Amino acid sequence: MQFVWKSLLICLFFLLVTGALIPKAALSITAAEEEELSREFMNVVLKSVKFVEDPDIVNYVNKVGKKIVSVLPPQPFTYHFYIIKEDVYNAFATPAGHIFIYSGLMAAMDNEEELAGIIGHEIAHVLCRHISQKIDRSKKISIATLAGIAAGIFLGAEGAGEIGSAVMMGSMAAGQSMTLAYSRRDERQADQIGLKYLTKAGYSGYGLLTMLRKIRSKHWFGTEQVPTYLITHPAPEERLAYIGAWLEKNMKKPPPLETDSSEFKRVNTRLVALYGDETLSLRKYKSAVTKNPKNPMANYGYGLVLARIGNRKDAAVYIKRALEREAFNSEFLVALGRIYFLDGQYKKALTILESAVSIAPDDPEGLFYIGRTQMELGRFKDAESTLKTLTKKYPDYKPGFYFLGNTYGKQGKLADAHYTLGLYYTKKREHRNAVVQFEKALEKTTDPYRREEIKNLLKKVSGKYEQEKKEVKEN
Image (cartoon, rainbow, N blue to C red; front, top):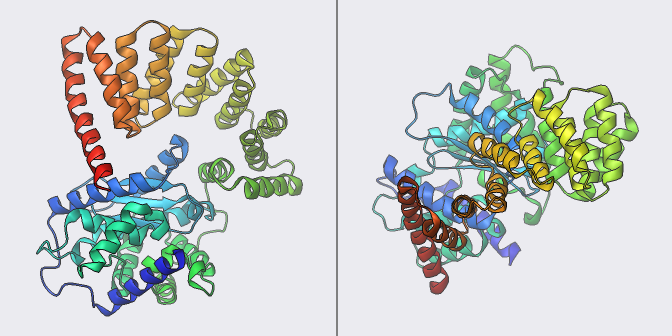
């Protein structure tokens, strides 16, 4: 079935290139319709894939993305950047500025230039409205159906899950199918625009070239081995030739090989060690410390992998080795504090974590584990203060809300506990649990302003829960 699906996607791509599936008139939608399509697409994506939600990694990717967005002309929507937790070479953009990078592709990057190159190219697709221009305004295909088709194309058949697959197959059977993969012309334009804004943002543009070479190197014989990126982003040879010629003409020389910042090295190490394949990550960093025992980043990566597989004793040894070289590295200190926390050595963990946060007060993982350690030590008031700071600074850090709710509960503040847990389950898109928590919060809350807020939240999540039940029933 997987082979059939990928063959189908490739056929759809060729139909796009020949123009057979593109309506001949009215080839665009309004900005409002584009936002609607984006919302429907996100509904499919959120049900189909897992994201890397590590704030250290997410914040860094967003920083790079926003640096490029800052040099664009005024935009009608806000750009968002995500990392999908899947070890494949893929990246794509939806209408209205949602950019997705797969963890496998990011793990293959060697520097920030390469990350910026991919992000800049995807931003250019959004800027040029390449997807929205392919949609027939006659509404022969509904926005929701188009979202399913887009998910089936950009995520790959298996990535779209049953929802995207069913929607896509149904619409094709009805003779209303449309592929949203990019054409060669789209790719050329995205490269042109992307390079323009990459260089304007201070990047060289060479990262796009080197990443495209890496992606092409994955293009072996057999459809099972074709990277999803090459299905949706065609003509790699043409692109390589064009980008190479553009860089030769517009840039004096490529940047030095070691252009990656220490921040990129740390984030990339964290991504591979914590979210990559355990066996491959273990092998990679064991080899790295064998070759260079004094390299702090190699020791950090190996320590993270060892802690991940439960070998906390050895993990602490390698994190300490990293600290011997960089004694005031807050990330290394947080990693060591986390190991001690997981090992039940709470007083030692708290001392190290507080040292880390004194160096980097806004470190989300440091704040999170300080809060959790304070809970384990019975210091619930301190934990409440720490976790409130965390959730205020990082409202997308879901675990912070869960443990803050538990901290309130430990103190008998049940109204606050249920309210905060309601927020947690809302962010997790577990709407049934959110409804239960908000209903309990409403029973126990006496503050009139908070009651009004809870009523509004309850109305919103109840509507989403009813919609979910309806979809389950229909399927």
